[in-house]
Amino acid sequence: MTYFKPPQLSKDEIESKAFEVLLAYYGTERIRLPIEVEHITEFYLGYDLVFTDEGLYQDPNFLGGICFIEKEIYINAALENHEGRMAFTIAHEIGHHVLHRQDYLDYLKGESPEILCRDTSKKPLIEEQADQFAASLLLPKDFLLQTWSFGEVRNVYQAYKYAQQFKRKHAIHNVSISALINRLIDLGVFKDIPYQKGRPNLPRRGYLKIIKFVRKIRKFIPRL
Image (cartoon, rainbow, N blue to C red; front, side):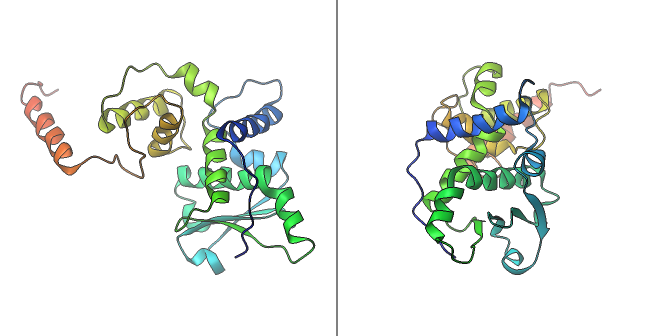
């Protein structure tokens, strides 16, 4: 796998570049969620989406890849039934196109094209930048800050509950709850909340306290 030194980009620059893609795609229409990353890939950027379980993609750590020359984005076939992870992976590969394509082609200088892959086992800077782009594309900053209406969040459990309600309210079906929580952490909406991966990252002792509390109050709730 060939890696090159990516350009130095601030979070604000990556945010701005993701927003430029949204403005170009939606044009005069209002940007609406869920963001149509598959349509952006195929009909705006002109890439083919290829779902595969061959070669590198037999490994579950390899979620996606992009070939700039062939204009193909590869998605691990195992993600087809996981809409949130699939959308994030597609948005991540769009990030490589927007942030890294020209610099990477210049780096190769006519050599055989390599495929940049999203590998969950390691995170060099180029992958971190593409992750930041994906979050910015799927969950635009202005939309979140203008529509978030919940109060202060005191713990991960509450953050998880509010994020779930927000997703339901705005029909955001292609973003996982953990991705939404992490995005809100980056935007400063959630403070003193750890980054999430999968289910809420609660200490087991705290989780058990919540379970006991829920069981206790059930005794006082009349059954319908």
